[in-house]
Length: 150
Image (cartoon, rainbow, N blue to C red; front, side, top):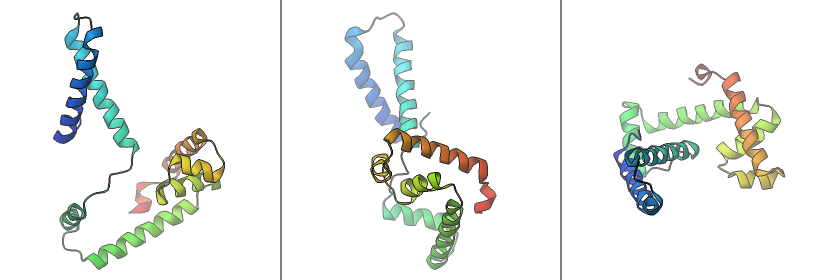
């Protein structure tokens, strides 16, 4: 379910701790089902939290290895030029968005600001920032195609 042995080990440890803490209140009928539900729910929670946070920063050696594997002989100067071109294309598309969506998308994704920072700067409530980001993502799904960025 987690696709990573390391993550599975971490979640297993958390599940075992949760089971240990909850045993005094546990009824023993349906024990196997109870333990399974704890494990499944913890794994689902982990996947949801992982999906919400941006990709974790990788070690520079890992990045270099992945670049070598993925590029198949393209020089670093060419890669840099391609990356800059891609960023410019994304910026142009973001500039076409409605103002209220562009503001939160730029702050959250391009400037790496938190919901709280965006709320403080824009004068909105945190929940309003979350709502605007949600609506902006839906707007992008409706108006942008993958082919536009290839």
